[in-house]
Length: 320
Ligand SMILES: Cc1ncc(COP(=O)(O)O)c(C=O)c1O
Image (cartoon, rainbow, N blue to C red; front, side, top):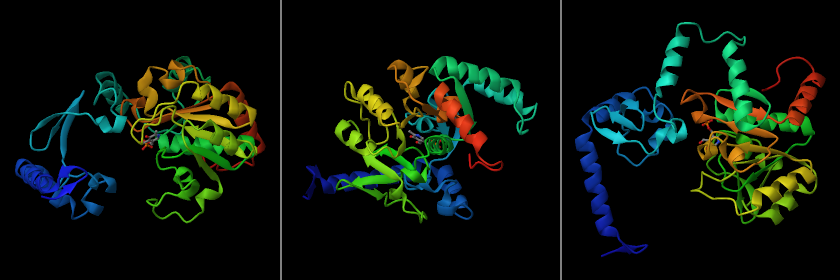
């Protein structure tokens, strides 16, 4: 018998083969769709990482509602993934589905505002406590834009993150601490710039390292989830955020809180539930009930500085 990490390895492998075979036997329609997809979809899936899951081929979804979905072979599942929180409040919530159907009859892309945006911004201000808002299509975009504003406002280039973070496809923050040194994340494809030139990383909950990273006054913003949710769940130690916010203020660094996952803490996110006072705040994924959309908010002072930065910039594309 071979043992690995205290596990009977032969038995584990036999179980894996049995599970794979059972999956293949139960999913003839998903299997057929997978083989058709292989003809025209790179890696046989619409987004290449959908191929990372451990099943022999992709499971195809037929329909999803609330906390359940049905696959193409008619099996019913309780969905603990919920679109990695895009569907945190259930698949196809009735009010969202109705609103989409209504709006689909009235046009949906005009390069001009409509009345709904006014109400939504008022509601975001009421819930999150930040008075000014902008919209984006994904949390990745919102984080990218918020970083851009922070750099424009502060005239500083550095971004600070916590080791092990994930904030979407924001190249700037694909940096890991390896033996205490920032290093571009190995898995990042096709990026040729030296990201570590403008990104610093420290361990979460390490106030000494945080202060050391901030004290030269070169960091535009600290981008952070209030509790880290992408390396398992790492909660802040008592008093951590109080002290971290004071450090940011002391060294003139803007605090950019990414509530994309931690919105699950309550209607105003972790920020509201724990009385944080960020300068910028991002919410993506579930904020539009699963429709691709994100929002980011500004404190009054940050909004004033952002407007000033834009007014002082030459006209033309802002990159935001
Ligand atoms: C904390 C956090 N922020 C941002 C994102 C990016 O979201 P999106 O892929 O919708 O841009 C993710 C994605 O998982 C995330 O976990």
